[in-house]
Length: 307
Image (cartoon, rainbow, N blue to C red; front, side, top):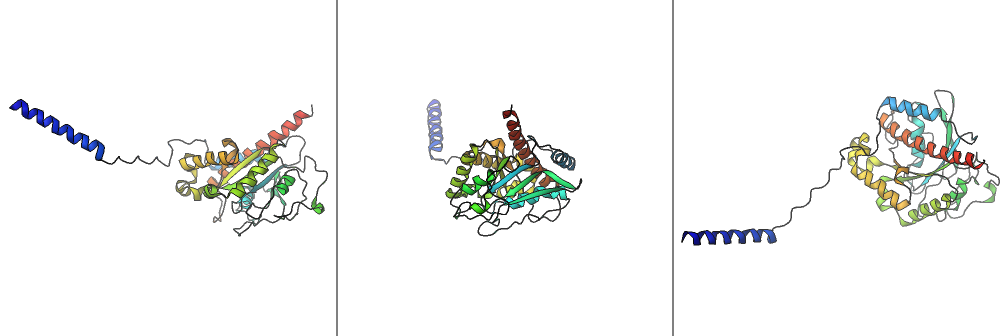
């Protein structure tokens, strides 16, 4: 009798276990920590690093006997093209710059092709680079031709972009030299808008990239507004390279635009700030130095082709 009772007890317990296995809901998988254990790009966040970056940029010597490295900026509207120009200007001026007009208009705030010299406040001269701004890309821009012409410097300073009609003869530069052409093309893409970027804008950016690739000119992506895209970074900009989400965004941008991950640089532009911030400056200057190094590498290749 005792043995029979033990057998019945074992069968009932097994039955309960089976019911639990098939009827209970699976526990949801825990969400991954938004902050990675270690930074995926090493960055020194200090005033000393900011000064080091500024010194390297000030003393950079353009190759191929070029007077100044020329950087062309394009990208979607409201992504912060003009704001980036102001941001990299600011540490060299010693205050937050508002020299390049920036705004949040319905269409591109930048209407004309303009070249921005950058003043070296410490040594009372110009820095070894210029940045020229272009019309932001939105639904009314139908052709990549003006942007490609700007890269090759067939456009003169002051040209007013027509989003429907390409370059007119009045502003056509027939004989550009290496001192006129772009040495690096920079696309500005807003991190908080990447997932909803219109197909039309993405198509135009790809067309520009494809045509410019034929010239051998390096191309870099600035991923702006990282603080708005990621709460972790919004609370602490120094965690930008520990953000799982920002790393995923950069990988996504690489797939969408066909630009290598190591050529995609996150930045936060000055917007509501009225005083300089070392973290903003370090991130912006780091991106600028990478752009200048890419451009100088292109110029070095031109040197080698002469021999």
